[in-house]
Image (cartoon, rainbow, N blue to C red; front, side, top):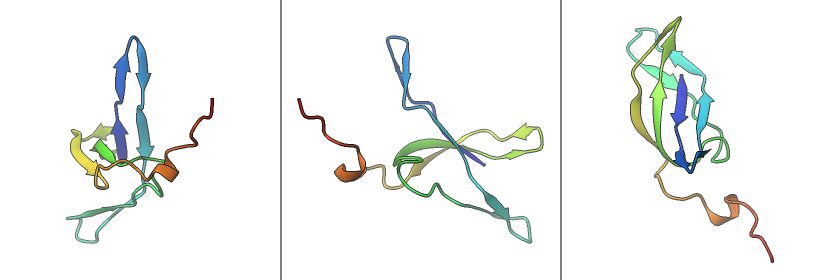
Amino acid sequence: VALMDLGYSSHAFHSSARLVFMDATLSKDKRSLTVLSPPNNRVYPPGPAFIFVTIGETTSAGAHVMVGSGANPPLVDQGVPLSI
């Protein structure tokens, strides 16, 4: 199972693209799939994503999902302010 965000482009510079592979477990009746989410917002920040399931050589169509609430991470998790 893969979680992907294609990011955005600006003047031939592509930013914020992410691809995270996650562990998944299929239920005994094979009707549901439990996916282990990324461990924290540094691996995959809150916001929109596409989720894909791959079995063998076959990949599903991407489903649009929201990771977390979609809100910005707490300021303490966004990096260190620069002093000039």
